[in-house]
Length: 286
Ligand code: PAF
Image 1: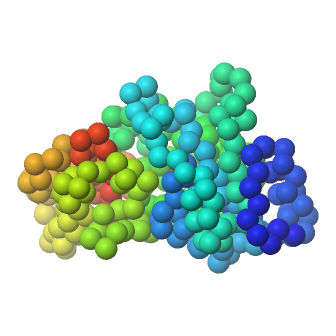
Image 2: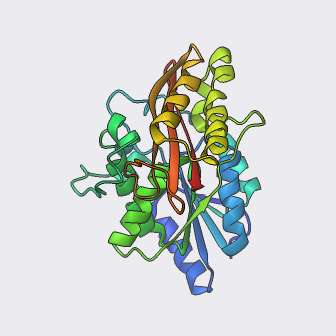
């Protein structure tokens, strides 16, 4: 039985510990991450602890999901700090494979989810969601969890993974957990550490814009008007550069022409501050 945090770096060791747990009748919860953990990740672990007997977390900065000009090599990493956060949040088993362990040879098999991968981040980060779907599918094969926990902050990622699980009949229950925010509303993200002081101050515009949308949705304005308002609010911050400010059906991620009662929509933002690209969203029932 695993009492404290155990860290393993090979697929073989992980599989053998999970096999033991499963033979003992344990329910396996899985929290996949890229590390540099924060309270958002801790909230996923706490949720997993409520329903699972063994909580497994992976920390793996997955090269497949970074474009050639993205931040793979400078993505923040601190395994000593992460181990402590994971342990105190309630992780039993921490899986920290190397790139060579995960991809010992050139990867010729990819998982690609059409349509939901295409708008929003799919436009500005071509290939990103193929990289995510491929690594998540591989991690699901390795861990074979009963439940897997993802944050709503990456709402498009959630839509892609849910579609993949449905299409490929992957026997896992996907649990989506609410966005965790700093006191001033900025969504927690490992990338927040990149922000300079002035950028960090202006970055609260994402949350303020989503709060505005939430308020305005009560009177069902025209979608184009609402999108213009989102753009204008973000542009009020001189350091903000909009990648997208969109309203789409969720989880289909198809265009919304008119807001109708019963619709489930996402207001989604991606905004750059200097070299840092932040995302945030609001999912609402009309
Ligand atoms: O959300 C993340 O941290 C990553 O995209 C994930 C799901 C761990 C896959 O690398």
